[in-house]
Length: 142
Image (tube, rainbow, N blue to C red):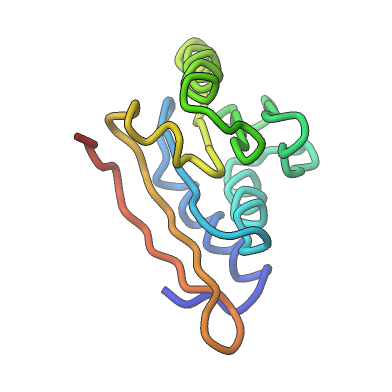
């Protein structure tokens, strides 16, 4: 699916939010600046989250509890080994299960071998402008 700009990326997120259930895991793959956080802003808007959504690159995760479903937004970009990534993911996943939150993970490559069921959204730069997005509904790994 082709997305022209950040506004359309947010609209895509709002539309996807309707499909997520408590404890859904959403993995976002794409290069820096591709629109992953814009997509999360749209998801949050679709879930009626009132907090300001920002990239969790430096804090590693942000929690948003004001919406129809809570959101835990993780960014694993700065974690460089599988063990640390897995442990951090499992801690956040446990909290998501306790609260019924959806768990959104940017840069999920290190944890893919440890997750069984998830949504996968791949974002790539389009040739001249915009983004190409591929949506894979819940998959079972392994």
